Length: 185
Image (cartoon, rainbow, N blue to C red):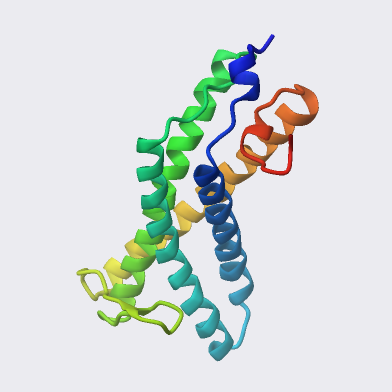
């Protein structure tokens, strides 16, 4: 049985906002990358330009989220979790943090290599400078492969995360999902 503190503990408002904002941006970027593949070059360039800007935004928001996490204690895991569930939750979260930085960084490096150092437009508001990487085919291919593998891992973690949250809510009937979903009381 859950104790009162873990049963009612919720993430802070800042953590919830950052969680959902980053999640929406990740889904948006994943869908944008998939749908742009078969588009005409001009449309694809527009979508990928925004994809790059969103990726850099994800890096910045992830850094804010890490700072928030370091200064605001997360609520304890619910008492009803099995040891393997608690371990998997921790590994999944570390994986998310790693990928929320590594995936957009590999994309930024790939763009920097492919464009031979041209900056990335941040929604037409300002430019982010290119990363100092080599401008050759091998370097670009390496970053492309890293980005693709990272994207596939992100999708896998995302599906695992959603399935686990739904399992806890509908099957286990514990408070795990309510801790992060603002409309669930």
